[in-house]
Image (tube, rainbow, N blue to C red; front, side, top):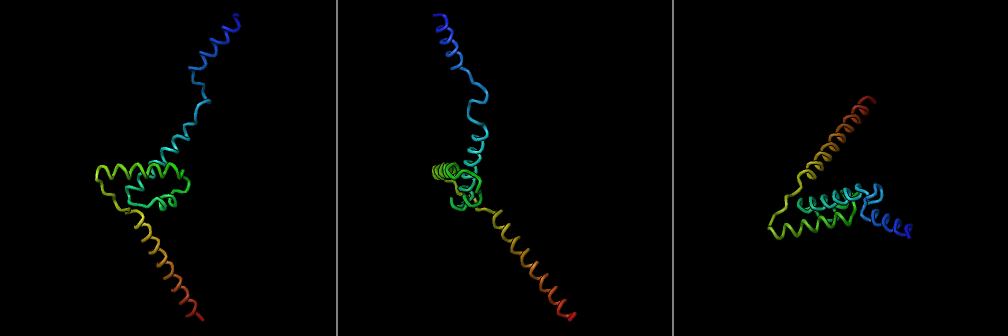
Length: 117
């Protein structure tokens, strides 16, 4: 009788206790929250969900979509206009300019080689 009482009391004590390492991993919750924030930011930056997926391949697609959808609903309810992405355009322009300058450098080098012959 006492052993049953001891087991029952031990079970009740452990049921209300948080044992370290037995709960959900906080890093998973953090990644989920980050993915939701990415989705919300993509919606506010007027990016399509497909572009958001492509730009953030490591993020959970379901969490990104959930954040995107929540932000979309919030923006519609509060009549908020999105902000067009500025960083994406600047990066593309830099890449194009770098490519043009490297192509021009190749042409000059080819001209120098041709002049030596």
